[in-house]
Length: 503
Image (tube, rainbow, N blue to C red; front, side, top):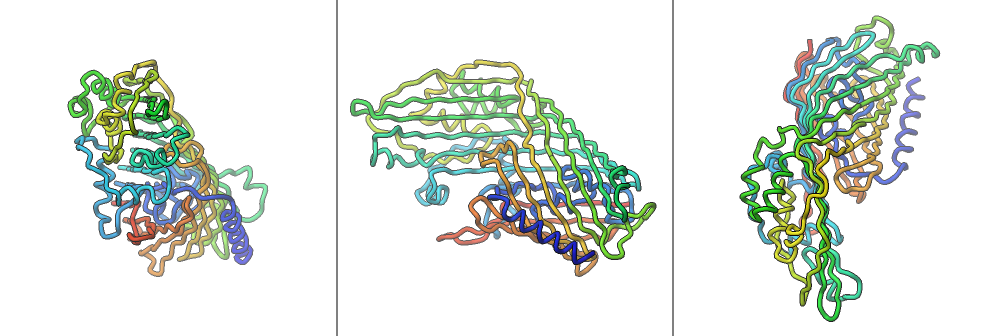
């Protein structure tokens, strides 16, 4: 049985590795997700609530109740050097707690080359997830869980032409295009999960093989939302550069008030002070519903009898196969919604205007960035409200498929995930992680993983915890390596579990 399980597991890894190009991993809610790059078949307890609620049925301890205070994680797209790891939470916080609108500095040639690194596009993403409190209870027939969660993601993309007009000088024939796009969204959730054994299917098979199903419906409260698309096109006509600009903005919450004030006054600092504050994302601008659902099939190995009826023993030796669908749903924004468009704008310049102002993508910065650019700011003068009716935004739905091989102190897993409507400008597609957990000392789990990024560069996750039965805490980081003159390791994700109590 054990040899067959090993063969099945290795085959599953090989199939996953050849399924397609990986996408940048973003799961940061729990230390196990950061350290292992996933965990759809591995997770249990509150870690399974938003990842695969079917795994609430998996017993990893004989205690049936679990209260968790404070699980959280942050992700910064370009990361920080390992020596500056402690700065990462504060850096990410500045993207979701609008407390200042700093004057942008001037970007240097070295910074520009680091940003684009031979590419014509630059992407940046920041995100956070916090589960302040959660409670799970498991029995022989079913398990339940309730949890609160807050999430946010802000992302932008811009092309190299913002800072470099050399391509137009070398070849003025095709239009010269500059663009910058940004997404910003924050939402808070109340979720209730239930899991149970699929008894009908299990009765068709002999042995202790077991199938679990879990559902986690949730109510979502939207904070601020904005989607900005700006395109500026230059074309040489009669020896001069003719420019047309196109700005599209979809907003809700305090961000819409900020835009209205900016248009009327032309003063970004004043508009920011009047409408954006550290508490802006706590004001509800939308309401939605969502669902997380999953299935887990477990094959016990060796002498493990934990899946037998009325057993109180935790699962120690097993092969698991899981599939889950998370964030199926949408939010309807009704609080100060606004859809804005520019009319056609034509401007003429003797040469393409330069731009050297740094852009970081913090709350309200893109609109101020355009407003402060004398060559581009007229699009705001022509920006008009075309629709103020409520609108829907889909949640970032993901499909998760994975396996986990557990044998006493060692667990190995593979995760394959597909994103359907990613908000971070990366192509929707597959990502893959292969990881392991080792407990050479029973109360000290050590976790590690290898992930494949879109550019095929290496990313690794690492984490450790303290698990003494009644109380558990853990932490993890995800790192990647940069090449070239600044060759070094960077940390782009951190996650920590402050306290978990079982009884």
